[in-house]
Length: 108
Image 1 (cartoon, one colour):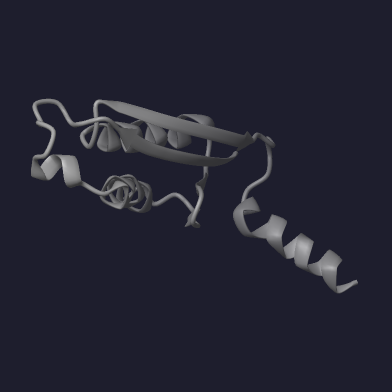
Image 2 (image 1 turned 180 degrees about the horizontal axis):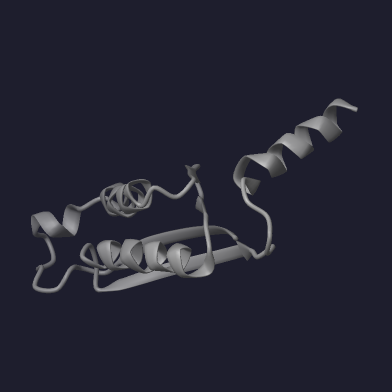
């Protein structure tokens, strides 16, 4: 399975007050916390400006997404999560293989 996801906080973290340092927290700090979890998972992954894509089986991929979402939740009172998945049993290495096939088609 390939799973692309984007996760971002909104609102203030629990206990934070408007105008406090927590109010000035940037979304990139929250995203960094999520990407750190993805990278530490050991699953093949790629992050671009819009999504992080990970490859693995259903349970391990969704475990990583859950933990990344929980990490982002510490940065706000609410979390937005967008997921897109390509579920293709019996295939692996598709994180790069799909791009290789595209580049080959463009070269033809």
